[in-house]
Length: 74
Image (tube, rainbow, N blue to C red; front, top):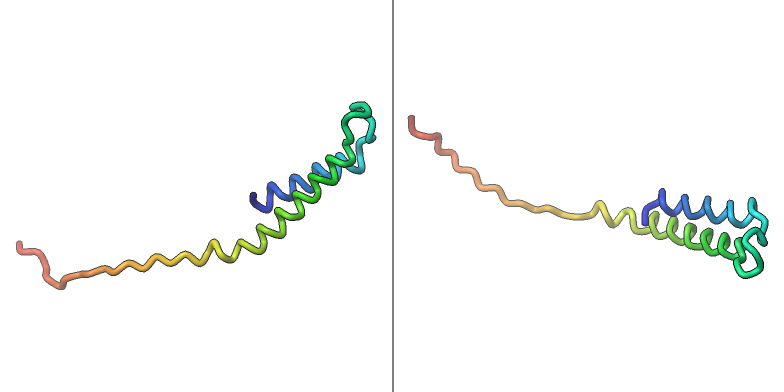
């Protein structure tokens, strides 16, 4: 999960938590609790993306190239 997806989950969670009435879908679905869960998932995703981002760039690609200094015969 990248930073963009994590920010999407944070935004969706905030909308569900603060902008929608908790009893819109009845008493069986608690939208405020689902919003809090989405915000937690988004926050953990942002932290993990930032912590693990430097490790992605540390791949090494060591190649040994052998060139001979012999020009082709004409």
